[in-house]
Amino acid sequence: MEKLSPLQIERLKYQPKLPSSLAGGINNLEMAEGSATQSVRDQEQIKELFKNTYGKPVVTFEKGSSSRNLPSKNVGVILSGGQAPGGHNVIAGLYDALKQANPENKLYGFLGGPSGIIDGKYVEFDDKFINAYRNTGGFDIIGSGRTKLETEEQFQKSLEVCKKLNITAVVIIGGDDSNTNAALLAEWFVKNNTGIQVIGCPKTIDGDLKNDQIEISFGFDTATKTYAELIGNIQRDANSAKKYWHFIKIMGRSASHVALEAALQTQPNITLISEEIEQKKMSLESIINYMCDIIVKRADMGKNFGIAVIPEGLIEFIPEMKSMISNLNDIMASLENDPDFVNATTIRDKFDIVENRLDPANAKVYNSLPALIKGQLLADRDPHGNVQVSKIETEKLLIEMISTRLESLKSQGDYIGKFNPQSHFFGYEGRCAFPSNFDADYCYSLGFNAFALISFGLTGYLSSVRNLTETADKWVAGGVPLTMMMNMEKRHGEMKPVIQKALVKLDGPVFKQLEENREDWALNDRYLFPGAIQYFGPSCVCDVTTCTLQLEKSRELASV
Ligand code: FBP
Image 1 (spheres, rainbow, N blue to C red):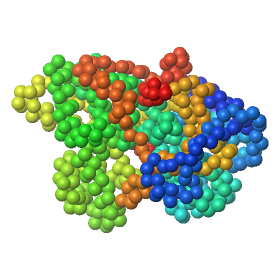
Image 2: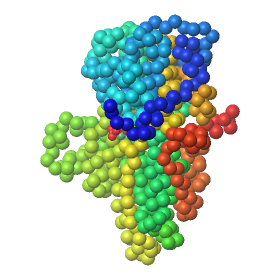
Image 3: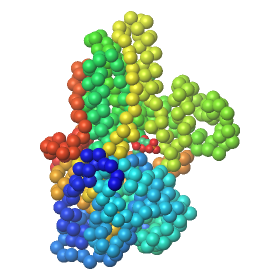
Image 4: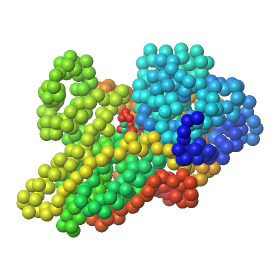
């Protein structure tokens, strides 16, 4: 028998909680419909592209008064994009609801992400299979991938695979890009009268798939708690040895939600927020000045140590970099099949090709960067056309520039300290942790709810579970049309319909919390040490969710 750790054994026994509407049973639900919806922007274009799925109402489930008799149904599920804690529980919740509805129902898992449905690679789940993954982290139950589902050929192949398995509903568990795929597939299935439904589930540690109906994507809770634990540990180390400045880049892609949340949980000396840097049009030089100012002041107090938290996507928000990267993205799309570029023998040759094509102002910015960063900016875009910011070592760029600036300040007698920097990147460490109790419950509910949406014949919807700062029984289950969240954006050099990313709101309560305290945190060490996620013990430790969700919800409550 496979050997399991004590925590694995105990977590397998955990029974996730459901909202009371769903706990009453899948066959005992009623659905309430809201009014027609529209996309967040570019309504005419989105409506034209999603003629069959646009404008549907938001729906909510309530415990019903009579039992529904549900026909048997086969469902396929896909894990898409980056891992996020709780994905296994979404599948477990979906499986339990589907079997509760009708024991004849079958759940198939497509292997390796969206490519599984195209290539017909799948497994069929049974109790033994599912039970081994309950409340565990990771996506290893069926694997994940980043294939973009968008071509007629891919849709046709997906249809053939679904027909072969008699699948009439597909659940895509993914972030903004993956749920854009879900919306495209849903539309195509309706347009072609296939009778196959598509439902999405909001996954991503990045926390950027949220709106009025989706309070948070799953995985954010666990990942941010994991990073906060690590930052807290480093703060204690820094405060003990008092000799290092730690520059910690935190995963989260474009938006700074993850870095902001981890900072609120730990109160480091410096926290950069990309959205603020963009709004204030701060150049790279002014960011360096801001950071050096704090380093110098702390050195004057005899503190040659500190912690700086840096969001992963920072580089894309610095105005001169943003303009250069946007220009570079178009160039990279045009160079994809260019033999001179593809076969260039040295990285310097690639730099030259790119520099010659960039607009002069952008070429100047590109050229000013260290070779390490220039090379990293040329790495392949992901299948959705995004720069892979996880591969750009912004923390090292900042360290290099700060060191140079401090040397110059020292030579002028304006800096008396010692600068010993350490760089870290926390990302993958948090994506597959055992889901916190919150994520375990939320994910299970999202999966169970996805089948509720299927059972009412809906398609092109995202599974939505709200009211998340209350106890799980008071959570509100329902669905939100995917088209409601969409707008047009440039990808791979072309305008495409995509789900709009939610960035940090600078007038929102979460950023305000940082803004009001950061001067104090910069010089007076107010470090917090959240410690490891606790799964068993007092509810005030085990069941609290993030500062982000609590602050956002309390503002919402205050404005009622
Ligand atoms: P998703 O949008 O797919 O959820 O991405 C999550 C994420 O962890 C980002 O924070 C990060 O930039 C990216 O994935 C890293 O991608 P990869 O796993 O391909 O290295």
